[in-house]
Length: 89
Image 1 (tube, rainbow, N blue to C red):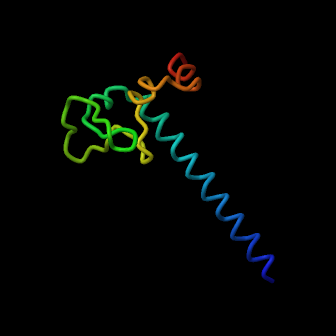
Image 2 (tube, one colour):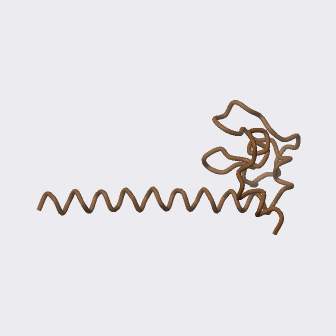
Image 3 (tube, rainbow, N blue to C red):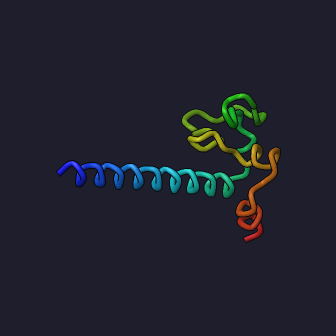
């Protein structure tokens, strides 16, 4: 019985991590499709870099993913290959 529980917990943990990565990738793709949001003030990365120049409208989300990624951060650190190929599409 203990082995079954351990296997089930490991499966749920793996599924949760997989879904978290999928959410992050979806948020990144959405930000790449809305480049004007990069102009809204937001903290990027681990909260040490302030990006943007405009105050976001009321009720508007931030210009980063939940993980703190933004397109400007990717450019400053060297964009990943999938971001460059996506912007050409």
